[in-house]
View 1 (tube, rainbow, N blue to C red):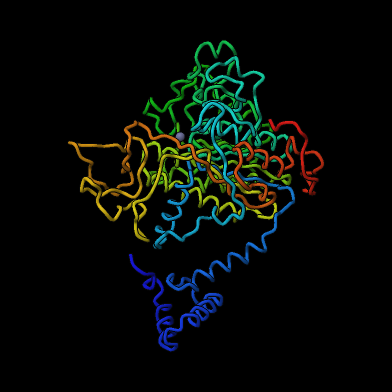
View 2 (cartoon, rainbow, N blue to C red; view 1 turned 45 degrees about the vertical axis):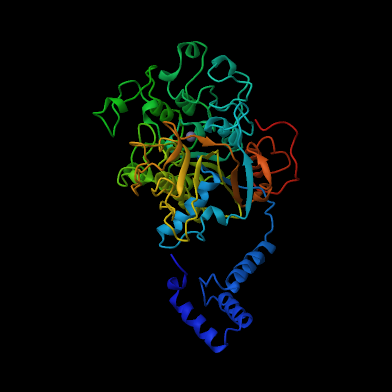
Length: 531
Ligand SMILES: [Zn+2]
C-alpha cells in the first residue's frame, strides 16, 4: 500500500493546486492545510504534510485541556471483560476493525479507546507469575488477589481442598451492588459457570467444579457445592445470559437444542433441575427462562425483572461460527440485559465478558480471537447508546494477556492476518501474527507449512503445546463516567473492584454517600477490606 491520496482524491487535487499556486511554500501550505482540516473540509489528510499531524494533535490537546473528572458517584456500573485481551490483542483488533471497514486500519479507533482514562493492571495471582482467569476474576471482581483456579475465596484457601473454603469467602462488587438495592446481571460468551462470571457469585476452591458431577466425593461429603448450584442459591442475580445448560439439569436430561446427542445432556447427579429451582425461587411473576434467540427476542424487558438465558450446553459459539437465527450475539444479550436492569431507579451493575477471545488465542486461531475482540468493542459502543454517560461508570479491561504478537516490518494497510514482506531464513513466508507457544507449532518433513487465510488457521508458534498459554504482562483498564479518573497509573488488578465499589457507593465505601440520590460524598472510605 502506498500513500493515502487514493483514499481522498479531492484532497490530492486541492493540495496539488495549492502547491502549484504557492510554489512549494511549505509553511504557507501547512497553514492552509491546517485551516482546511479545522474547517472540516479535509477529513483525512495527507500524512506527509506536517499540518495533518499537527492539527490532529492540536485537537486532541484541546480536548485533553477540557477533560474534567466526574466526581459524582455512579448510579450504574458496567464492567466489560475481554478475557485474554492483552494490549497486543487490542492493537491488532483496532487494525482489524478498520480493515473490516475498508480502511488501512492502523489509525482506526475502537470504542473502548475513546475512553478518557487508562491505567495498567498487574495481573499476577498470589501463587502464579502468569495468572489464570479464576484468580484474576477474584481480584477484579472481589477486590482481593487470590490463588489460581480458585473463585471468590482469598489466597488462604487451597486449590482443590474443599474444607479450606469456609471462612475464606470474599464477596464481589456484583454481590455488594445487589445488597445496596441495585439490579445486577452477567452476560458471557462462555458458560455462565465459567471462571470469570463465576467469580461474581461463587466461592469455590476449584474452578472446574461446574456441576456436582465434577466434585470429588470428599468435597461433597464436606459440604462443598458446585458452581451451578451456587449460581442459583447465592446472590440473587436479575439477568444471567450465556451458555452452560448441561450443568443445570439432571443426568441424561436431553438438551433442548441437541436432543439426540447424549454428550450434550444434563450432568447433575443430585437430580436437581436448577432452572426450575431458579424460576420457582423468584417471587415476582416477571421471571423468564429462554434457551434460544427466538426466546430472547420475545422477552418483554418492560415486564421482566428476572431473566435466565442459556443458549448452549457448554460455551457459546465463536461469532464467526454462530448461527444468527438460533443464538444471540454478545451485543444482543447485553442489550437485553441493560434494558431490563436499567428499569431499577437505584441503578445496576452489569458484567459483560467475551471469553472467546481467550479461547481463540488458546487454539492459536487469531482470526477468531480478534473477531471476538471486535464484537466486544461493538458491545461497548452499543452500551454507550443505551446508558447515560453522566451517571454510568463504564470500565473495559482484561484478566490477563496471551503470548500473541504481531510484527515483521509490515507496511501500512497490510492485512492484519497477512504476511511479513520478506521471507524467512527457510525461504518461506511467515505471518505477521505469531504465538510464543501453542498448537500452531508445525514442522512437516523438516519445514514449516504454508500459511492460509482461513478463519481457523492456526498462526505459527515457537514451542509446541496443545493449548497456547496466557502471558504475564500488564493489561489495560479503560474507563469513562463517574469516578473513572480513579483509574490512573500502574495498579494491582484488585484495585478495579475497589474503584467500582467506591464509585457505586457500595460496601465498604458506602458511608457518607447516598446511592439513591447519588449525592456526592467525601472521598476516602472506611479502612476495612472490600470483601
Ligand atoms: Zn485462558
